[in-house]
Length: 172
Image (tube, rainbow, N blue to C red):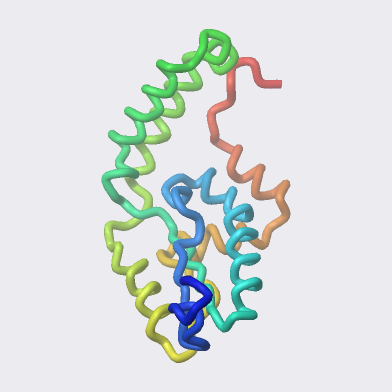
């Protein structure tokens, strides 16, 4: 988008905007399922900008193996957050919660792919195709897990996510 005096936004039908779907939330399955918030924001943006001839393409990636999503980096981040937590929070969650979470983070290394070209190929198609799609799913996990989950009832998605998720010590 640009100013109102003939910038990119005024170019007409060929102007496209590619977004990455759910910024910052593509590395973790629980965060990924919080995706309707991002979907609502991008859906509103898509509908609003369509009146100006702007096409918004939403790219919803699955889990990718990057430095940010490495088990070592995530474990360190969880541990630092735990160390900064108040004694009340630590008591409510318990040491077992932290241990189980760190163990789960170690198993995430089996998920996802190193092939970031899946995302860049979606971006390229969204920006250069004569008829770009409104939504792109990058990665098999996005196509086979996250997309179907977005159509499921909330209670079922919650049950699936919470199945093996660590529970706080003082949970009801």
